[in-house]
Image (cartoon, rainbow, N blue to C red; front, side, top):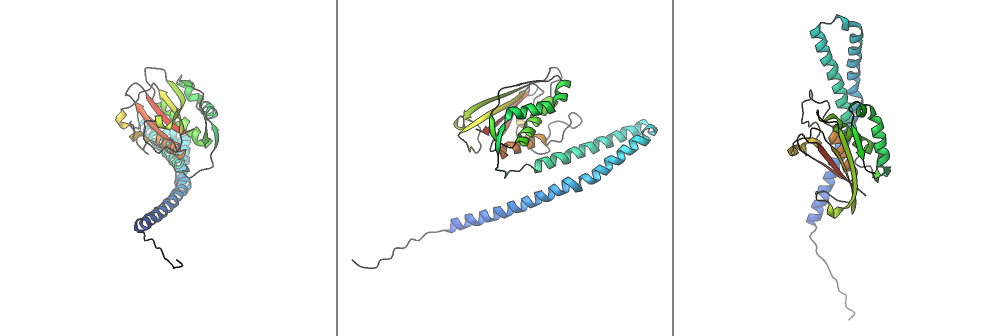
Length: 268
């Protein structure tokens, strides 16, 4: 009727503002964390490695010029010093590899996992031949990802299977692959794809107690003493980070004395 009418809506935006503030704080914490990680990379790649290189250089010189004068006890101590230096170098390199896995990378390319496996087996050929390991693999799929990260993933899993082999059986590794719908995956994780490639790496090695299935993917976690098996305790943590970087999921199952199985789901 030609009358001016005003309609107003009142909305409580308290929760929205609180959520935005929480997100802002989280982003600031993430930026700080990334800055600290970059700082660590610089330290690990130079400041930590430089004195270690000098230590190893002088160890080598002493060994070349003085080793024939060592007593048996001195030789034993010197060998321990050499091994400790090598272990320190391995720790630094593995930590550096772990920290450099870029979880923000989105420019994935098509990666043929058959080519990845072929390269890994070629790189590990000496170890495979010396241990008489048999590797049997299904035809593997193509995925969207980072080639060198997939290479590192398979290399770590296969190396682990060889390292923790049985003392009474020839090592056998089976790599299987199948495509499944996300609804058919019983494991709980954030599923971003309707279909996944389920890839399993199984061995007949010493296995482990299943209660440690989560622990083995943590940095520096080891189920054996370092004098029993070499390693830094970072390899499986790297595997987990790589799979998660590819929006996937990895877990392990095993029985003590009868082998282990590492299962990963990668988006199809």
